[in-house]
Length: 218
Length: 112
Image (cartoon, rainbow over the protein chains, first blue to last red):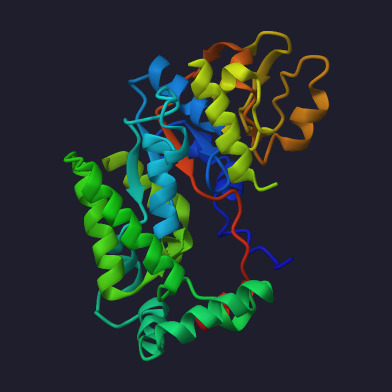
């Protein structure tokens, strides 16, 4: 298994560093469903939102079609169990990662490109087919160091998923702010052809201080 | 058999009976993790403390191993059916994160 950079891991590092106690935003609670959440995790969040509507609930996912889908899964429940109305958390707020966060983290104040943007520009010449082949290759070889990028171009699977998410949003015709936000972010993702992992935003500092800012002002 | 097929069958049964899936007591092994100033009173297993502050051990019999091994890395969210009471303490926010841990090479720092 690949070595873990202890400063970058999310749930575990935040938990181990005592972020739930020493956050500038006050004490808090960290939850992870490890990817697509199971029913128990969603039920727990639902019950929590019901019992303590006064505590704001945020969601931090990758800036990619899967991340956005996972956020929607927490908020509205997965499609397959539509009759189970209770395991949803409509109050859940999308903290990030959004396109503006990636750009903020990638571009320094003086305007020079950081590694993310450089990597993005370098890969922009590559065809989609090549990049999807590369991602298949890197998945099979366990994410080799050379192919790993915090910001990378979309694979064919990503594009298909983003398009189907957009279609679904159009069908459902939801008009709340979040749906507009999601539609916009998916369109930016498709148009600019990039995605980013959570740790792309902590490139400027660490995830804890990024969260301090975002949890406090949200 | 693929999980999606099993899910669909279980959902069909639950829907036919007009009840939620958890009422059938067919629930996948717990996967979600929790960490923070939360104490849950459980119906059969006493109080679970998810506080990750080191050195604090308010563990009841039978759950010592669970809490000791997972305390700093978060603990599994217990089945919601067993929850009787929750004490959120001074909790000001709840953050749901996609991933537990991010696996990638430390070599990345060489490129900064």
